[in-house]
Image (cartoon, rainbow, N blue to C red; front, top):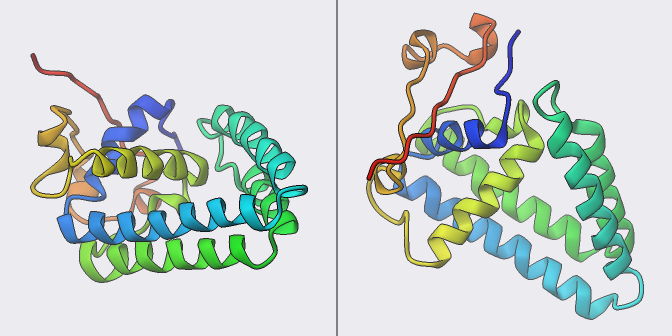
Length: 179
């Protein structure tokens, strides 16, 4: 099975899985909740959380390089483990809240499978990128690909509603900036 080869190629695919403004709003609320718990962790655990956070960022960097070959679940588990060990109440609460909102968006609104099952680290990075756009007032309405002038063509099997895993190939994305 082939995989998307870069985070830049993944980004339009990620946005194509978040076409509904309601889904994006749910993601924004969940990610805001998570970021709030990260902030609280710095305050509540000023000795242990900062080094754990730095370790998480380092693991995340390594994991982004692995994602084109296979889902980086092991580094992602390390990232979660480091942060949860340093902040055992706030970080798990943040993760549960974020995933609850995102999965409501996917399963109830978009009716699709979250990309985090296949690309966990790139999904996290793309979710934070989408949150950043939304925090600046973008992507609240309409089609996110159109708003950001990106082009994405789903393979025929994906467009027909089949899962990527069922057809044995990953979607190919091409980011095109229109002037």
